[in-house]
Image (tube, rainbow, N blue to C red; front, side):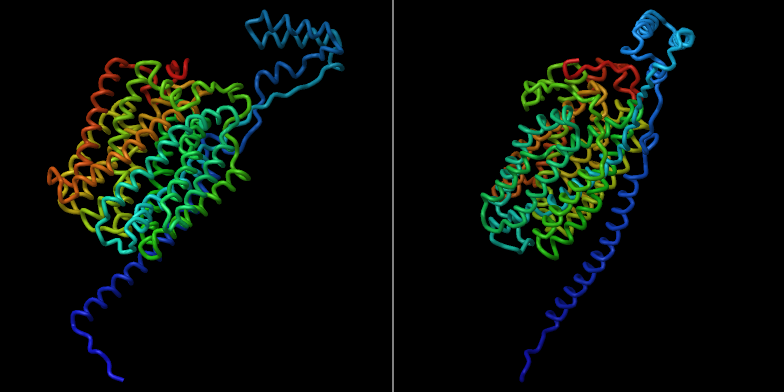
Length: 547
């Protein structure tokens, strides 16, 4: 049977494809080894590393000593009266105990005494919050690197992602994300405030189940745009994991260790997750299609919910919970009023966070589409670059926040981010763009520093509500940014662009970080020496939440 001769050019193409596939499989193999080792390491750390002592211990307090020899009111009324009189009027508890014990011995009250013991349970390790947020961010990373390609497969009816996305696909990805963010804005403050009343675990489980269902629906959606909106509707109604895990960390830490702990939280749970999720999700999406990583993300969140339900300890004991929830402040508008309506430092820090978060959305909102349009990258090329972001998020805050302090970490972070976004907007080559991403990631040190400042300004019993209000504002920012940056990208990468500047979205992000620096500089000048601005925050007077 005759065979068709193969040209030299075709042989070269086949050889290149085989080489590329072999290289992909090689990376795929080692990537899975890396994710396995890292998962085991962090899982062990979450169980073993503690803040102080991990195993809860029963500490006998002064109240237990005081009550251990007190006669029963029913059996020895005179003894009870004596105890009340002594402890009410005495300024020296030890002397009071001595006098009380002598009188009880004289009365023979030992036989009628009842012994009660008050125990204080040590808080759980804050690494539980880090671990569960790490799993959550792992799913987010798998989703974020692939969801825009799912949208393109529905709108453009193609699986060839080397082609430039259509303006309709870019616009739809922004609209769908805006629906998710807007609904999260409306509900996240209520869910976070509710956790101050019922505890962190029930709402953490609710968030895991909702995000698992979201990923499952998105993975199964092949033609219907309505299903994409349904998935984001579910996600918007259940999204609250980040502020709840932040609240979990604040429950388990002292004021002296809070800033460093939040730096660890961002580094391990956010940066550590993205280090794995972006390259692995990108490789899986390029090899098996963008829906496979979404199915994995769904399974991870089911596992996360099971671990929280059966293993993770509750960080907020009943004695520390709010008896009643203020529903007027648990809604989205009330949450914004909580941030903007109180002390000047809290208000200015919130305004600067608003501008900087909106600026950061220039990278988060349309990164995959921008990299594809500008440099022709697919998920497999975009994912490894985002590892740089994850590494910097893991390393920079842990080093810079304790070294510089909160004030300088915030201000220098804004300026570094401004430079990074400006360079990204003008980058003509992949090399210069990668360099700009490194600068941006270092500048993100400002965010854990701002979170620590806001947490320091909150009453301990209302930190969940405050962090929920912050998360609610961030979701509003994301809803605005998703549509805004999709429009900017569509306009400035089209043939009819008003300026030959495809990186205009990053220029906008740079200007917004500069605004944040101006606002926060003014706030810090007005509040020089405020105790909430020090890493050690003894004596902080709570400005927020009506305090």
